[in-house]
Length: 268
Length: 252
Image 1 (cartoon, rainbow over the protein chains, first blue to last red):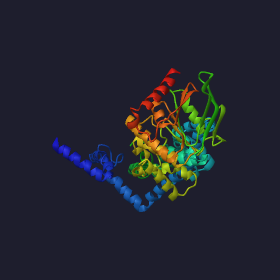
Image 2: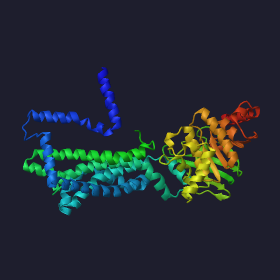
Image 3: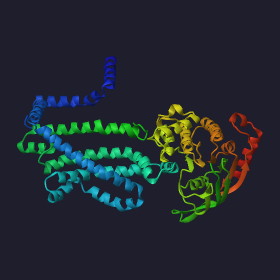
């Protein structure tokens, strides 16, 4: 038992020094299983290529410049769509959260349109806007906006009434209360909404690229299917996972740590 | 600081579930002099917090009038500082920023408002905690910040709504002693709401006993200041005042 404990404690100390190791380690068994299964050729190579082939494909697609270009296209689409979704979603959420009239008027509409999945809009969007950035941006905005609005409303409504009262009796105007109390008070929920929204948006983007795309990671995968290249399909899937992991742990998680967790509004 | 006048104040709610009108406050009149400390004491549901919320301008009144320095109250405003039972500190602001909030709303520059905030923090022995966030402080320290945040804005009247009800008994006694000390230093006009009879007597110049939305009686507290629990705990005059108020509140 003691050697095992020693190894474990060494691991704990190692990950305390380099936290990124802790996020890589869980993938080792998965990777090993993949490698063993493909090395033993349990399934035909054409159906399930190994890590080596996927790596080669990564290198060659990067060398040709296809992968960097597609990756950039996908990220720009997500960024444009997410920016619009945030710019529309947060103000809308604040209005609905603060005003019971706006809530009564807009909430049923919100629930109705939320039920129509993002992809369900593609047929009509293609007729309206064709196969381009507008269609894809519309789908992403549509996907991002609901989690952002719903979570912002929740955040605004969960601010204790005494927080508003304290600000008002300290001399804050209604506009200052919005900036000093409502926005920071709702921020932890807004970040949760962004996290969900971007996650859904990322998936919707890939789906949209598969259906209407002429470039992007989704298109890469769909194009590979036409050519029968399982290697490139796997490569696309792995890139999707890694990219989301980066967005979440390098952008969203630090925001969460610096706001809600720091203020004690969210438990660690 | 200014005087506070309450004339024939009343508040009736329409209870949607019961389908009837409920009278929370009935014909309350009260005169509080500038720089006076008045406690309003009574059991839960006697209407004391409703009175405070009306003075603060948080809820509309249905009858009578409230005047601060002769001017009628209309909505919340910086002339009436409020200390809440739930502290209501801004969790996203440091202790210093919380205390500097009122001056900031008045448009006072950063250097000057920080100087003001530091002065008040020093008064409550909170200098060490200036850069910390409220969730990193104990309940007692949080409420010290709450009191200083209200005072740093130099209100005409300080309204305190059971401010020490959610801290432990030992801390509460310390906070009460500190409040009397700070009150003597700054002499704000104070309305202090509590259900704790000993607390009401300990702090105030005058205790207003309230029951079922009506004023039962006003009792002048002629105890010398500065006040401390060590001195008053066994004090005969303190005991007789406390039991007098207690009997009033309980008999109603």
